[in-house]
Length: 278
Image 1: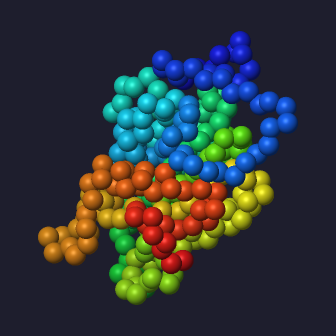
Image 2 (image 1 turned 135 degrees about the vertical axis):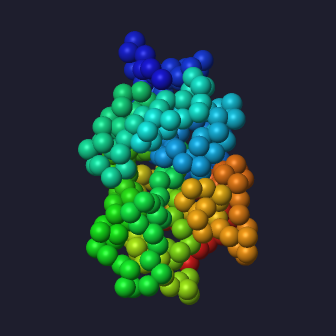
């Protein structure tokens, strides 16, 4: 993507060009219609895990897509499409997120769709805690850094790109286990708590956006159980729930995106578009 300095508000991405002009007297309007059919769709996918890459592939099938930025840690994205820009960032470093946003702002003047797919359930240092005795401050801090604190920093840094005359949608992937009301099994202390806090932050941002981003929506979504590095250790032959492929997950999520309006802002939905209790 490259900005065309000869015309205010114009940029090019691959074979497409888009020019956005703010006419005098134009009013902000509530988000309406299918965001995925937005003319000159500009999208940002945060994360290049299984779901993030599947969502990117889904978006690249759309002729109206003008530009797609993928924010990721290692720079490894399997797309050669000229509409794609790869921007490195560290989800646990606010200054890295700010730098990534600056790069994106130098290329586009608005984002219509932003999807945060970053999440951490386990890593080499940490596994979900089945008992309270396994909970440690280090595990809590690590979970909150990725699953909770990333969201408000992303919204802060990309806020100006999501506030414009077109409709805009910010989706952040959460998890059903982050539901306080739905917690009937216990365990997974750090992950549950960090996702519950994520949901509260998103709900609070939605209240502020009702005034500051009247044509936008911010929504938490549970993607279901997806065959991925995050869920693989917990899916056994006797697993009783449906396991989706990343591609199936992307299709399900995109179908829900198409139904969302500004009235959806502050919702917590599953992959079928059904409300998840807070």
